[in-house]
Amino acid sequence: MDTHAGVKRNLAIMWFANFFISGSMTMVVPFISLYIQSMGNFSDSYVQTWSGLTFAVTFISAFIFAPIWGRVGDRFGRKRLLIMSAFGIGISVFLMGFATAVWQLFILRLLMGVVTGFIPMSQAFISTQTPREVAGRVLGTLQTGTITGQLMGPLLGGVLADTFGYASTFKWVAGTIFISGLLVTFGVKEMKIKYSTEEEDTKKFSSKELLQHIMHKPILVIVLLMSALVQIAHFSVQPILSLFVEKIHGPVNLAFFAGIAFSATGVGNLIMTRRWGRIGDKHGYTKILIIMLFASGLVYLPGMFITGIWQLVALRFMLGLFLGGVIPIRVAYIRQEAPLSTQGEVLGYDTSLRFFGNIVGPMLGGTIAATWGFSSVFLTTSLLLILCGFIMLIAWLRYEHEPNAKRSHSHSSVSR
Image (cartoon, rainbow, N blue to C red; front, side, top):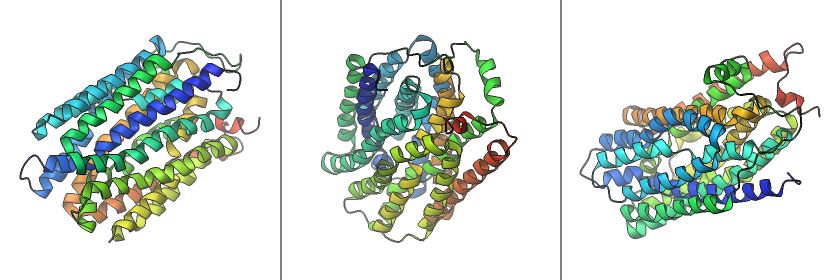
């Protein structure tokens, strides 16, 4: 990285672009359910169900398009896609400020999903320019931009919503998303960098050949599947969190306190995500994933007994300490295992599976909350994260830990 000033410049610019995108998107997440609630005299079960559906529909279309955009990016360059994504998201969010019915908000979020994927695409963009042995640290650094935005977004969004109303907040948010598009348009230079003959991989794969390549790497398959399962666990709480805050805290400054609850996870993420990247570079990504998944599940388990807002804030902060490193560690592992010429498409599959988790998680969480209550959502989330830890542990013991097992790149990098 020290010998490529252009790469460092790109990393810095993409850090700020991710900061604006993630901050803008999370500004509106805490009060989507409240926005729906303000559109009519609806029952609690109606609001909870449609909050989950409206939250998830973006990821349904994104689930379909992510691998397609990844392959297009590998072939024609990622900068154009980043620009298209930023301005597409900005226009969609701006129009949401004029929605007067639930179905209008639903359609706009569905259309936004077609161009959603700025942050995953930025990870692919930086990943291909990063040496394998420092991928965890570099991607962890990039992730801090996303997390900082996620940290500040809900708080600022809560203040704006309480001050100017929900509709006006969407319009303000769109402006900051357009800033990200301008940063990429005028600041980023797409570069093709070769590090060594050993790492160079210019072979062109068809989609079928690439899927066959992935299926011959069991750990990689499990890591990709974890993308969906972790997102299901994490997002099952997201769409109903503001309603849970209203239950345990009351309606006073609701959007603000819902923002604090969302941001608490971001604080934990910000503290640890780059450290987890460094630890993964040193000790192997699979082992670190196992630790984070078990710890996240155990930390979230007491959530079913929460009775106060600050208990919720503390618990989500603890979750952030362990769960925050999952994305950069997982992307760093994919960076090491996937052919360099197909990074975008493989990360597109990873993104698609993440979006699949984003689809299932909110609907599952909304359904569970409406049927058995909010506490049961925390229990389900905890058990699913612990299950993910067991799956990763079994895969590690079978394919990496055994003396005769074929070592993955994540282990070979440790011995360098």
